[in-house]
Image 1 (cartoon, rainbow, N blue to C red):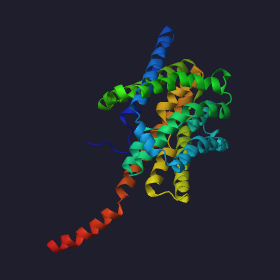
Image 2: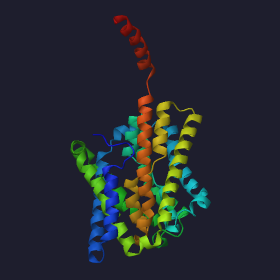
Image 3: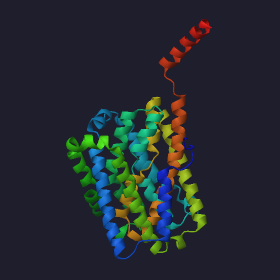
Image 4: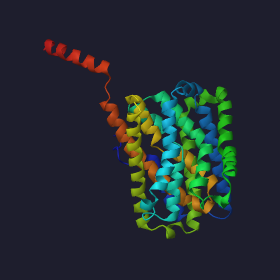
Amino acid sequence: MARPKLLPDNFTLCLVSTVILASLLPVHGQAAVAFNWLTNIAVGLLFFLHGAKLSREAIVAGATHWRLHLVVLLSTFAFFPLLGLALKPLLSPLVTPALYAGVLFLCTLPSTVQSSIAFTSIAKGNVPAAVCSASASSLLGIFITPALVSVVITNQAAGGTSAWHTVWSIVLQLLVPFVAGQLLRPMIGRWIERNRGVLKFVDQGSILLVVYAAFSEAVNEGLWHHIPLAALAGLLVVCAVLLAIALALTMFVSKRLGFNRADQITIIFCGSKKSLAAGVPMAKVIFASHSVGAVVLPLMLFHQIQLMVCAALAQRWGARDISPEKRAASKEARPAAVARR
């Protein structure tokens, strides 16, 4: 039996369960230190496997569509941060300062890779361009996101460290394993393709580990005493407003710039989404440990909303998209069927 479109998926349910577990049984002391090492290893393994999985041929094939990629990157790294700052008078009364910092962090993150490509495919968009655009966003985000965070979030970053120091930390923890995976792709790439379940397990497992560790630290620091229920309800509204504006803008801009339907779909899905897989490890590196829980909470909520809304849009557009050849064939087949009757 198929899961209804608007119900949370299994991974989202696991995320919610992890937050509840960390709230009731937070890890602390020496166990927290060991858990921190475990999460670092898991995140490094995650980016190593992503590097081994990413096809260079697919990236080269889509790299020539520079206008599309430029629109996606501007939406991801320019429009979103400016939107988060511009909406501060509206957003600040709805959430706490810590949650608003999380919203700004969300706005600086790169696009998703897997779900952007999957939704583009379902909606019959330009899949090679989606592969290239989403992958480029993810890689550039390693450098751009810390720099943007240092500009738009001046008082929440860990210890007031410089953007370059943060970039270097992310390079060591995320980019180096990714590059190592790319270099070893000729040897292990086929095994990765045959065992996609391993990547999914490491992908989701590493995120759950980081979320548990982050929320444990935040709960030990009194997270839920500082975030009232009204602020959580306000956060839901904030995330929905951000996604609605991003979808509307990418639709409008892609049409005004004269992109065809397939490219419009790619721009909408790649330019309006934010990566939980990249965001959670980055938050762990960029922010002080006690503030990570509040910072990733908006991202977790936005992640679920974007999955539900984009899944519904992709299925609707995919069902509606009929090529001229198929439409002509359908018209020709209809009289023939009547004649046979």
